Image (tube, rainbow, N blue to C red):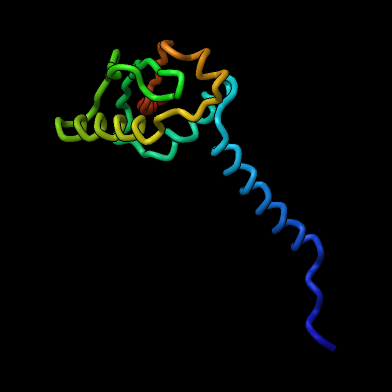
Length: 133
């Protein structure tokens, strides 16, 4: 006799996994049409860039144009930086790089018209875990 047949479910599972990955990439590439879509898109993009030391956080405020690009210069409105001067500088550089890598935001013309000139704020970083909690 020949080789034993692989169960059908393994082939179906492989096709399903490929389809899920393809749909995820397609959704990421499509422009956001709602604020919820925009939040998901931006969060997914930001999560790809690891940030420095645990406990450091920074809040960045910026305005957008209708095409999803930044209007003016982003501002840091809050920061709590841990570590030595080099670690703090590296964290800020990583945060800036993370935001820059996600811009311009991919938005539909309808959402672009709704968000043009609006302020957005994002907080990046991780809180330091509490000891004994």
